[in-house]
Length: 341
Ligand code: SAH
Image (spheres, rainbow, N blue to C red):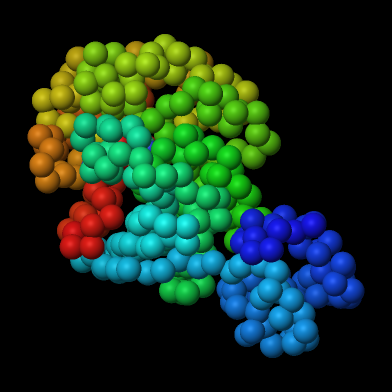
């Protein structure tokens, strides 16, 4: 039995095909319906012209076909685009599309706002308004691909919110993204502040997503000063969860490290990072250029290259991620659902 008004996106394949059978429809209807929904991207029963009118009506009466409402779209000089949406169940979130050297990456949000309050992040200043549903996360990709006809090859959960604090909805979205939108788990990056319970749960899953951990400091006191959650989750507990992940998955992770002037960019910081990245943890380091946030006291570090060289000399893999979309406040940590920015 399907509840009247259930968003069609939340149904598993078996549920939809059972429902069609119950309506007395032949089995090939399933393929037709799926093609409309997922390949052609037409979530309007009335427009599904090769379905009988009676079935179109039943679809309309039985399910809802929610979509996102675009409030604002801005394009950066570097081609990056930012979309601000009103969600079907309320709340505003942002999605960023980043074309870069042959890749098309979509940066999606997993929550409306965020509960973590990381001191340097714009989203962190908002607090958590609510969790997104799985289908609301998925629709961010769906809309860009189908409504805005943008190519998408990679997905990163680096928009608003902490994906591992909305675990089941994120997993539901990932099922849709991999099965229906055909993006391989290896092209999907989950970025987390580090929730050990969520990391263990990910370890148990059969797919291998890319895992990125927002470390930002390997010195306990300094990490606590910029990431309040670190007061409750020690670096050793985190390292243990990550090491288990690497060993069981036979995989490497990425450590994200935003370089903040005077806060985490000294040689001592680099050395602590080096110590953190030792076997059984297997990680490459991604140094991130800080995008300044109005009203927050942090500045990008001028020591980026030096810091990278220090790590390289110690034998680590360390890359630099330059900011993209900063002129339209679409860079990491700048998303704050404001229309003006
Ligand atoms: N909650 C998740 C994902 C959100 S943000 C996480 O913590 O990983 C994605 C990345 O952007 C994180 O590494 C985050 O720390 C970083 N970030 C936040 N604010 C930033 C800013 N102003 N400039 C650059 N990176 C920022």
